[in-house]
Length: 420
Image (cartoon, rainbow, N blue to C red):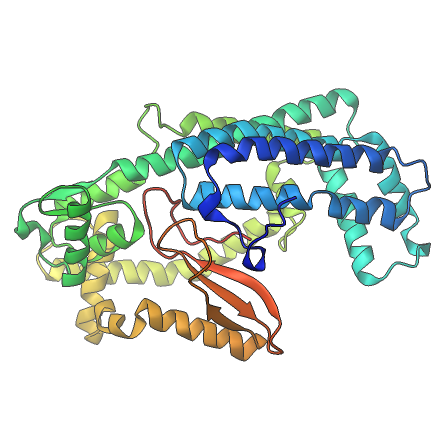
């Protein structure tokens, strides 16, 4: 299932439509559920192969479907995809709970884990066994029956709330536009920034210039625009997203997520959700994180206060008769940097064209790992902005496909991120 008959088994984005996904999820979950029953009810004594390895292979098709769907929901979403995500996320959560809360299955995994020292497993097998056992424990396998039901309910609620948070944020980001019709309001902005704003306005069938809350539009405006009132408008719009007590407000969503996470952590025996999450991360405990942050604050604050005073003094020297606010910081910091060093970010832009940076990163990967990247424009993509590359090992072996998707758009979540 989902081994596509396409070149390199690439995803046939050109043949997929949203209506395909829910039936595919239902079929994949049903198929995986049947496999799960066979593993859990196996009358043979548990072995690494018939239990741990079988579990590892069980969800291959479902995981691939998830990767395709949730990547699309992040990179090229629509109201239809968002609705499907709201419907399938609880289904997926319920299925994965069926694995970790299955007593027969956990008994088999625990038996193998308890006897791991004498099992003759290699390093990779031991690692997989440890991770599998830990995954069961951290996802409710040791809970009472009553607590398991509560855990199920909490995790299914969380799966929907997290999606709702992201949907609201994307909608709020897309909803705002700063429409400028007076060219004097563009004072200070570099030509390429003005040109991009003009293109944005044309795309929206508007005259003049349009600035949005997406990073390539927002950040240069805050750094270069002379009009302080407009900087404040843009800043407040950006930082009040989903905080307006309307249908896109995320305050209640956050409250629910925080409380559900705390209750889930308590059920699993942790004092806080931070204790639960950090157990599997480098820091290990909230205490170590707080100590690190406090040390960082103490070491960095003197330099930060000195820099703040320097920027404020620069502003005063140039006629500023007010205390600098958050919407002033990037603007006056850039001015001060230029005065001190005769240097601006605009001066280095010609050397950091996207094509140059991409070539440099690919070359670095070749030097470090011996891999190379061959463009392949014949492969189907989910948006015209996407470029595809074959990733080739140094001996000529094909390793993977890389899809690069650099530019913001209304159907795409913001920020720098990747999926597999």
